[in-house]
Image (cartoon, rainbow, N blue to C red):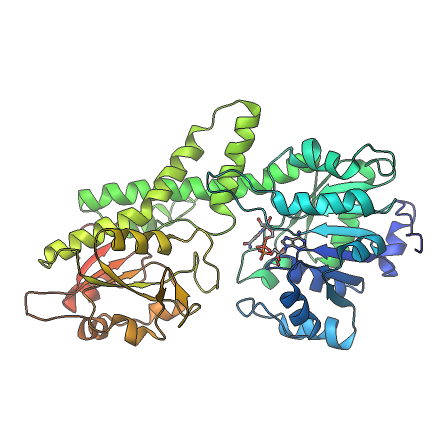
Length: 465
Ligand SMILES: NC(=O)c1ccc[n+]([C@@H]2O[C@H](COP(=O)([O-])OP(=O)(O)OC[C@H]3O[C@@H](n4cnc5c(N)ncnc54)[C@H](O)[C@@H]3O)[C@@H](O)[C@H]2O)c1
């Protein structure tokens, strides 16, 4: 095997400019594949590694698999079909042994009891322990809790430290990814990158490399744990603020106040940052990141009350949606038992095909538990089997003849729902038997819904129209 170029500070600028480095991105999913495209676009031979052979095949055939990430098709074709700078493989050993820089973009979900699940990183760490080449650098883009790299990962890769010693003949850095699904191309060109490394030389090299690839500010932080703490802090801040407005939303429903009106007024104050209440906080980041922060607390034997309280409130929201449904059905004189409810939206956020930790599943299970019947529709999950039933093919079919509709995700398609149309499609057996709509995302016009004869409930939407 050819020896890898030594990454020296003295000539690293030249080495980067001449595109002589080989980059491996391990894990080419939502974040890793766009990352690999950017490294290849910057001129580097880039190897995308994944355990999923179907994904590898799709990537090598030049088809862009992330249909809900706009703007990548042309870039992707350039680096795969035209310049042939990006290829994918399942052969991790071959990729590691050829690469100067190994980027980990592996999933870091959580277990059923809300503990961080680093199993994918740990599997790869075992390969790195055997195969990482001297003078290469490992960059951890996966989100991990502060201290995980220094206290655990580093030792797993180094082993006895005889072959590889970070800070001596290899480097390890954290560059936690902060891009927003559905807007990754835009964020890669706009959002500053966080870089922290275990030694100053690796920090410099990784900063220069990322500066070359991403046209954004590079924030060089003191170490890996500070970089990871920064990523988590930004996301936990959002989880907590959403928890706060969710609590207020429940209060304002009781007080007859519309939270949207309140937030509109608060937004006029220069130091208020508006967050919106909703049916639940899902996705691979916010809930997981809060639990990662809480987990680092348990390691440090400390106390983090606000994060835990926000999580509790946010996790309660899908159940609150069902409480609003029951309230609406009561007003219509119907029990939830045997009522037919259309749940619109399974994705955890608008316009992406991702259901991780989304509230829809909890809402559906709760309704079924209470004896209700459910129809499910999401434009990103049409006509497939989910939660032991078939999802609907279209919105029309989903709402036809139902007693109630719940909007659980603010997909673009749902903004075009016209309340008059909705009321005419839903079940209106007798003049007093009004159909119910629960808006979990502030999508519908409350006044128009009521005018159309719908019994309207919305999170935080108390008060008269
Ligand atoms: N999706 C997001 O919104 C987002 C945003 C910022 C950061 N992140 C972080 O980025 C990391 C990756 O997330 P993602 O959303 O891209 O995940 P993903 O599930 O979309 O992709 C991960 C990929 O890794 C592959 N993989 C799993 N185990 C592997 C192994 N042992 N060897 C090789 N490949 C393996 C999977 O097959 C998958 O293709 C996570 O730490 C996540 O927290 C995600």
